[in-house]
Image 1 (tube, protein in one colour):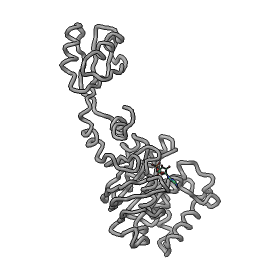
Image 2 (cartoon, helix red, strand yellow):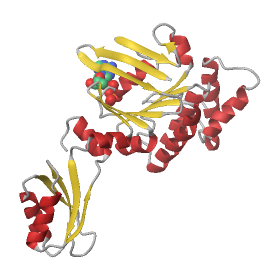
Image 3 (cartoon, protein in one colour):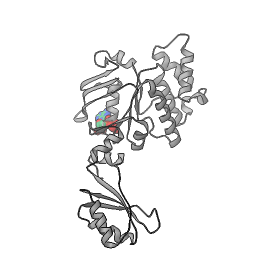
Image 4 (cartoon, helix red, strand yellow):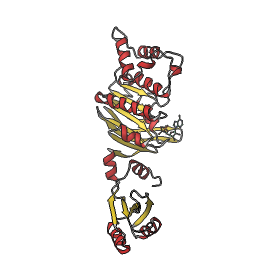
Length: 311
Ligand code: ADP
């Protein structure tokens, strides 16, 4: 497992990581989600042992990064955001080189390299040069290099960024297959990616974890914000929008189009529960109420709210 206690890191006068604590259990994919500059890469670099922390403790599979960094680092595979690769080598040579650097040798080595290449879908390009690879294959190679020594823990910094949708799906599938036996911490600033890849999320903002939980739990934390979808008939969308806005508890109204001809739909946000007022308005105007239901907060809403952005 990954265990992080009260991690702090300053770059000069900039506090990049401000007292972060969390843990990740085996078999879990946990997402570190936050906007650019939130402190994700810095946190992952410290966890990967490539950057010293200012203070705090990191334990990987029980090994303390400060006391026994070699043992801690042996347990992890790290894909950095920049994913630096040896451009002039062939893909297979690159796998061999990194295996050598990790002290892997012996009769089973070739099989191990072939297995990592196969798991990461690299077989079509193993005889190519690294410099020729597309972004998707470079990312797969980075992942293959990270899993070569069969680590228990994977730390992946933005593994799906700058990939096209098909490549993103492939990397997500690969992570899902790997998680069966591993502890995975993955960073992303892309909300749907976090939803698609992760069992649990840590939302980070200005170096602090501002919320954590499953997507469903984070939705629960937002339940004090009331959003409803209402669909009415018998009036113009402009008049409906105007009158919906005049309902006392309503704070915003967004026209969502007409899913059914002549029945405009709106998302209505309010300070309290506006359903009685909405019903009264519909009755008063003789607008049949075609639909009225609560809308759960999206991760996007949760994120903007928790990180103090406009909602
Ligand atoms: P993220 O990965 O979430 O985009 P980073 O960890 O890269 O965030 O950055 C966190 C903060 O630390 C930002 O304010 C960033 O400008 C600053 N920072 C990151 N790396 C350095 C560095 N090498 N020197 C100085 N400041 C840095």
